[in-house]
Each structure stands twice: as structure tokens, then as C-alpha cells.
Image (cartoon, rainbow, N blue to C red; front, side, top):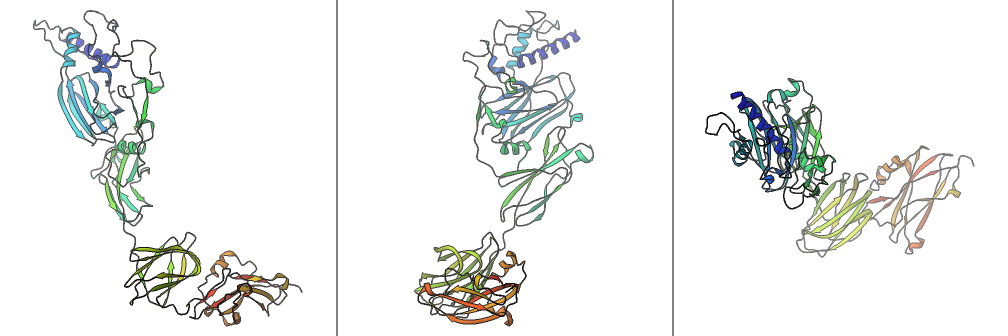
Length: 577
């Protein structure tokens, strides 16, 4: 009799699974049975089973929850004293979940015959009873229930998301010791910061025993973001894959599980008229894409190394770091205890103090910036800034007591005159360009009597006359201005393969004639013209060697002794005359 009861209980258990997987669509439709009266399976509350699924033993499933819409799963344990492990992984929202046991009904006939009640009554008893609650949890941690000895029965997993629509994963097994799908963590699962810089942070962690002891293939994935630490790789992928297919939610009412055949390319609509469980038609399969803003998150899988340096970070910025060990065979992962750190600040820029009427040399790194401060000691009506950009263009901004007065690029020599204000302070910001470092001279004054820098024409090129070349001389010309200035011309013999890089090094307009050799000096002369169209001077450089190349430079020297160099010119004498 006892064997008969066990047999009938197992039959009931398996038929309950069939009810869950294949709900009936008509009262006249019945599953094939030996005894039509004994195995009458007409489910009255069909909506109860509509979104139900069975969790396979030893496999992880992924599914989707709509906010405030519960979902129920079932798992079968066929024999008593069976180990059981159930793991629930929330992805991008906290979950409420509960695991209950629905034990199969024993003999309740009251006649002592040992016969089970008709299956229709037992089925209703299973449906109506809530079962014994074994475990419950609320939060976004990866949480699990584990028992070394569980009774046979139908285990019921109820899940709910009250915050938002979300993705989650469930794994259940009756052989947890042999499966070991999740990689193990070391005794100290923390991620340590071993080095900290302005743009780099080095992380280190202890290796997983899954690789060292169990010899299973693993890899580590590092996740970097500015918001918070992640408790599962599933949560990371939910953020990264906001536009991917698995984040496209099905319409409410459809079972979003691996067992929904419509997700595998089969038609979701049945041509039969009796597909629906309710009076309204069964909704067609569809997906609604939930648009999300792009998140600043990076995932890098680095193989089996347990040290990693994160680069290209922003200075003085807090970052969160997570490490996940992934079982390459099962593609299941376990999270280390994440950490966070703030990168170091940029070295604070020193503000250079400008003195009234004195020239200051300034060097600006490529793409760098320098800050200058000018605080006149006396009241003033105007402030004049003289700026000489020696190499490439530089951007200048001038603020008076926080108010922006000037912002523009400067090439060569430029002069700016701004309206003054009693006790005003001026902050000057110089920004280098992308080509290379910038070198410049700057002068600020409240008493501009004579210009400290010489005035320049718009065109500072030196023109060579090819037809006037000889074996020992070259004739050149350059433009002047209306202001009388001193011009000095220098020559230097160079190789025939004199290239642009060498020429660029020679183009520092701030280098004066005082660094040149006396033997390179050709002559100095004063020149100006009130008529700018006639402000041109020529000069013939003699004593040159036949067939040789020479670098020619013209310096204009202002009243304050500051000089500016014109653009260099290379000329070559004739080899045969």
C-alpha cells in the first residue's frame, strides 16, 4: 500500500508539472489518462498558471519582471533527503522573493484505506494552499537558499519588483556539490588599490580557488564607473546593454522565459481559435524598447591576471571599481568586494605676478595653461598689455575682478588697451595650442609712454630676389612700419638638406641678436616710412661662397631694447657664374 502511495504521489507530481507547462485551453480538451475519472484535469483558475514556468535542474535561466507584477516559478524535488540550492541574481533593481514548499497531500479520506484522494481534489489543495515558506529576501544582493536535505515536493519561487521593470536570473540544482557553476572567492575577497595617480589607479586582488585548486578555466572582468559598486555582472550588463535585445521588455501578459517558443522564432500567434485563457484575445508577441541615457561605465576582461592598472582617468574624480571572476565553461560569475578611490588632483597652477612696466617670460605646455595676475598699486584709467608670442599662436583671456574683458588668439606681437578701474585686479589666462609648447613675453603697464616692443608690419617674411643672386651675394627685402626702428640682419651657412624641423627651431621670434655670433652679423640700420606702401628696404649680403646655402634673419629692435625676429629665409648662391 505504501509503495502504491509513493507511486501515485509521483504521478501527481509529474502531472502537476504538465499542468504548469501545458495549460489547457478548453474544458472539453483532456490529457490522455488511464482512468478518465481519476485523472480529470480541468483547471478552473487558468490565469493562475498563465505566467508560470518550471526551473530546470542545474541550469541558469534569465527572465524579466514588470514593476508590481509578480512572477512565479516551480522546481521539483522528486525524492526526500535531497540537497537543494536556489540562487536569485537581481540585475538592475532590488527584488522581493520567497521560496515555499508545496508538499504533496497524504491520505485524507478518513477511511484509513491508504488510497489517495482523486487528483482533482489534490490539485485544488495544492493550488489553494500557500505552502510552507522556507526563505524570503528583499534587496539587490545575489542571495541564495541552500539545504543539505530537502523533502520531496513542488517548490514555489515568487518574485516581485516594486521599483521598476527589471531583469533577473535564477539558478536551482539538486547537486550543488558536484555542479559548482559559480567560481569561488578567496578567503579575502576584497579588491585593493595599490597605486594612485592623477590619471591612473592600480588594482589587485587574490586569485580565485576555482583556477588554482579546481583547475577550471576562469577570467577576471574589471568594471569602472563613477556612480556606485555593482553586486553582480548581470547588473553591469544591464547597464551596458540598455539597447540590447534582452533589455527589450515583452508586453505584459507574456511569459518572458527560455521556454517561450515565440522567442526562438516560432510564431507567437496560433491559428487556432482557443489559444487564450480569457475572453480577450491572447496578445501578440511584441517588444517595447526602454530608452535609457548612456552611462559612463567600462567593462574590461583581462584573462587570469589579478593585477590591473586603469588608465585615462580624470584627475580629482571618484571612481568605483568592481572585479568579477567568470567561469569560462558555464559563463557564470561571482563578484569580489568592490572598492572606490579618488584620483589625485592636478598640480595646482602657480599664479605669476606681473610687475608694472616689466617684461615677463612665460612658457606654456602643449594644451596647457598658465595664470598671471596684475594688481596695479595706484589708481589708473587704462591698462595696456603687450604680448609677444614667440612660436605658435596662444589664446589669452583677461578678467577684471571676475568679469571677462578680452578673449582671443595672439600671433606675433599684439597690444591690448583696456579701461581701468580703481583697485581693480586683473587675471590673465594663457592657453597653449595643440601643435606644441608656447613661449611668449608679456608686459602689463598703466603708463604706456613708449612701446616696449617694436611695431611690426602685417607681413614679416623676407623676400629673396632670384635674378639678383650671384656666386658670392644675395639680395633680399623686407617691410617696415611708420615707426623708426633699428633693423639688424644676420647670416649663417647651413647644409643643403636643411629641413622644416630645423627651420622651426630657428623660428623662435623671442630669441634676440645677442645670442648670435659676431661673425654672423651683416649690418644694422634704422628705417621707417610714413607711406606704408613705400616702407620697404632692400639689402645685398656679400662675401658668400659659391653654391652654398645660407639662413638669413632680420631682427627689429624697439625703444625698450626688446627685439623681434622676422621669419627666417634660406637662400643659395649660384654655383657657376
